[in-house]
Image 1: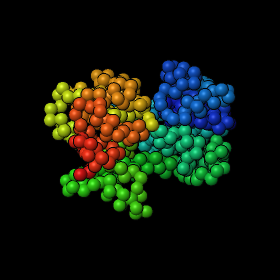
Image 2: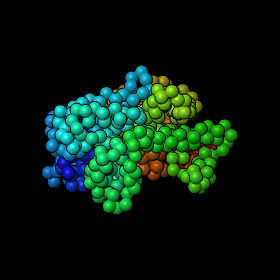
Image 3: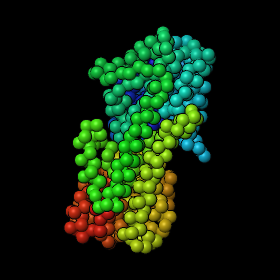
Image 4: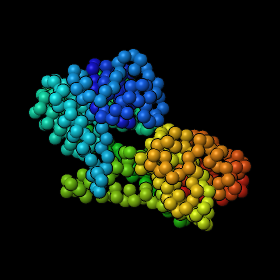
Length: 434
């Protein structure tokens, strides 16, 4: 099947490469010439495990190409819109500028019978508005097919997701859209991947509802970490205990520095803003979810100050600035935020992240970035573990002690056994742990 993917950022580049790798003829289109040149040469503009290999296979097969010209979408049967919906400056609402521009740019190149498929995360009501525009201008149909990618697992989540959701119009148009999407995703559907066919509004709500639920679960356990710190309880044991309840589950119950990235923070804010636009107060609790999450950053900065006594002039080793492991994404990263705050307070902050040094340096060039863990640790008066990369979790107290000038550590992701570090002479602080 001939497919165009409009927008070649994180979502679009992964989707284009994976669709071509599955056998479709794909053109990825983006307004950024530098990004297109990089992708065309077989290099991803961001770190994502498995993507370089999928990209090279697809390009070598001849089934994938990239372009800056929207006209190159003409002739495709399916057009995926995969552009960003960032937070509007000065507001919590989602900025639909890029979605609207992508659809407007497609209109002259659509043919009767084409299917436009939105993958971007948008406020409920967007798909219905765009469907009217697409039908009136071209005779094409529109479906909404939300993405559920986890950074670090995006390739697997594209080719073998845990479910598909199709938001389609009623009647024959909906049946046609469903049949087309079934053909696009035939490989995964053949293995039994669940498929849910809904109306537009439900499909739009699925992604933001899922993100709001996950954010709430994370903030809940972080609120429990605050209680644990005040009472001497251990939040990791608490999470294990309540996680055995099948109604709750253990996943996403890891207390720590909190969530960040390009989805959860802006999506819960936009969801609440849309609820307010609808005249509802149903999602006002998400303001508290957001506040709990942001307080985790404050707490880590406080712990650093408590251990150092005097922050100004202190050498601080920061391990990890990506918002999560297996990613170079520093958008709304709590780790980078903590590092920047300590630098602003006068600390000499030395950062190592296996993949995010370069992306972080573009946002925070005043920090010192080094290429390995020993260099970051050397002569440090305080160590902060802010992203739970596997190689950081493997650190041993004796190895760290041999490099640092003072044995102090803040485990902001609760990945270490406190007793082991204290036995080695470290002043150790976790979050929600005695």
